[in-house]
Amino acid sequence: MEYSAPTFLLILFFIIPLFIKLLKHNDSTKKSKKPRLPPGPKPWPIVGNIPEMLANKPTFRWIQNIMNDLETEIACIRLGNIHVILVTSPSIAREFFMKQDAIFASRPLNWSSKYVSSGYLTTTITPFGEQWKKMKRVMVEELISPKRHQWLHDKRAEEADNLVRHVYNQTKNGGGLVDLRNVTKQYGGNLMRRLLFNKRYFGNGREDGGAGAEELEYVESLFIAIRHIYAFSVSDYLPWLWWLDFEGHKKILKEATNTIRKYHDPIIEERIHQWRNGTRAHQEDWLDVLISLKDPNNNPFLTLQEIKSQIMEIAVGAIDNPYNNVEWVLSEMINQPEMLQKATQELDSVVGKERLVEESDIPKLNYVKACLKEGFRLHPIADFNVPHVSMEDTIVANYFIPKGSHILIRRQGIGHNPRVWEEPLKFKPERHLKNDACRVTLAEPNLELFTFGIGRRSCPAITLGSTMTIMLFARLLHGFTWIAPPNESTIDLSEYERDTTKAKPLVALGKPRLSVKVYHQIMN
Ligand code: HEM
Image 1 (cartoon, rainbow, N blue to C red):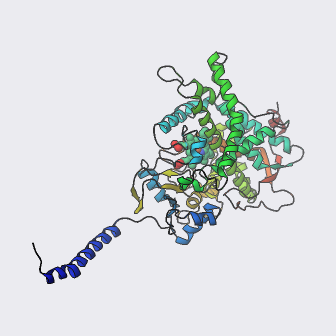
Image 2 (image 1 turned 30 degrees about the horizontal axis):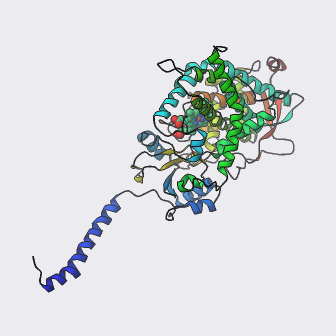
Image 3 (image 1 turned 45 degrees about the vertical axis):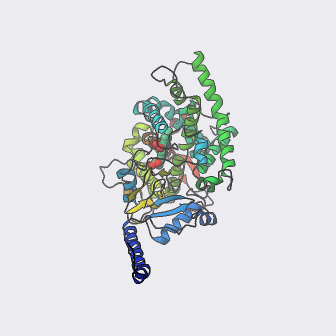
């Protein structure tokens, strides 16, 4: 077909541009119909919002400010090419972990998690897949099943007695100042070690029941390790910088895990040897259980590396919540003595004053549990939950969530959300006692606060985690009276600048409040 010159010019100058315009228009209407990413700061090419992240430490406070400024309950920041989605709304969190849980059941791939889990051999930080399924089954069916919980009762009871003995020794002479941060941290470490290795301390403890130098080094390393996994390291978001240790996180994490391994590995190796040469034949603790698991061909179900990594993950992962919760709750209550009184009255009416509180009392201690639940709402140990990763593109709360996004629930954001909670910054345990008949639990399936999470990646250890926390608190409260030290009128409730822990360790004046014979029963 041939065109005359004017027709050709008409096509060139009018019809083609019109056609292009129409195409563009079509495209933009299509685009405007496609859901957008959640709101957030405009990212730079390649690095995304990393420059702002580095300029605004600590990262969680920078993120809090972004969300407050945007007045949003869901936001997106881009770190490298990863979309990090932040959530402070229970209903949106439920969309992620109830409605679309299968899509969000993975974890990030990065240097710290790979290093600590020896190449993703564990449960918590291992991405979705066969290895995670295998290890989660081991956790749920072998380590923390109701039967196993019962089997381990006496070990937990022994550590609850050790706790009282240690505090009693510091307070018996008319009242003494007790560093409750130290006491609560050590209790968590002692209990986990008892369950893992049937051992109270690494090294020798002190005469008064306190921890010696090795133990202090070990527990401190657990805390350093937990603070440096998923710690917003630049090389986690810009994988081509994997060799760079910009913030020094890799060095710190390597040192901490080396210290932990220094204590764990000789015990694990010796124990495996004992099972192999027949000098050990009875299970006493979780390590024995892990070593004794067999596959259908009667071969060991777990490799040495799987056992070591899983034990490291349990020791690191279980240490922080109970201590932080009890330290904050006691601090809040010392400043509001009527609450301390109400909780001790409940303990006295359920337990009396002639014996120590036991796990079997827990179902009746609703006010005590409401106090702890309020602590989880107001003062969660870290603002961010363990990150989840989306395994495909999807839409949540009408926003586009691309495959590979990291989902971070802001625990404090949810717990302090004024749409959900009246006077959200006030410590008010009564809010969890909706009616007299209710039985309080620390778990929150509606995600109106974030204790154990929900869905496939939720904490499988609700019973153990709750028992540890309640017993720690109940023993301290029932066994002793607590007031602020003589030179302080109240306990300072400031939050540490770099995380959500209490800025100053809680030191309080404690006095035994039960009859002497009760303490003497455990002073062997
Ligand atoms: C008060 C104590 C505890 C609290 C508040 C707590 C809370 C949590 C939370 C919030 C998660 C992440 C949930 C999510 O990603 O959505 C988690 C995961 C996990 N917790 Fe706990 N936890 C506690 C104690 C423990 C203990 C004592 C153990 C083991 C002995 C344990 C084992 C695990 C495991 C294995 C996971 C990972 C589950 C998975 O990724 O599939 N937790 N925990």
